[in-house]
Image (cartoon, rainbow, N blue to C red; front, top):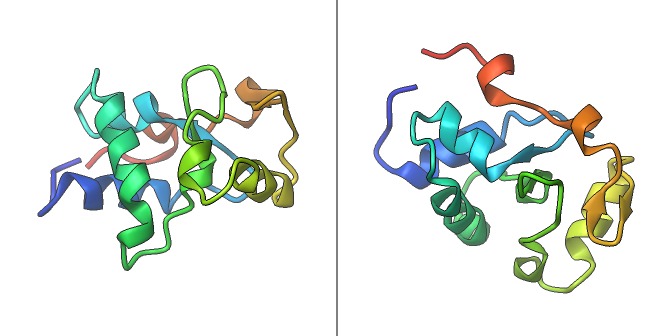
Length: 113
């Protein structure tokens, strides 16, 4: 996928495509964008997503083990969990239950252009 004006915009474009009730990881997004090893940069984009004009469902992006590592950026310690649960995603001890089953891999789901 060719990079646009901004890395963050590229990340937001991918995150906007995560289906309702599914989750992905920072690393999967970085790899899809051709920047393997840049999961932390995707995390920075998620942290700043509230400033975007786009609808960015940042709550659907987790660490590689399904942990809600970005939860402290949602305005409260349980907001991220509540957003996921509102989509039918179960969370226990800050981890998505059945993460592997709910995992959405942009590299498999989106055509690489």
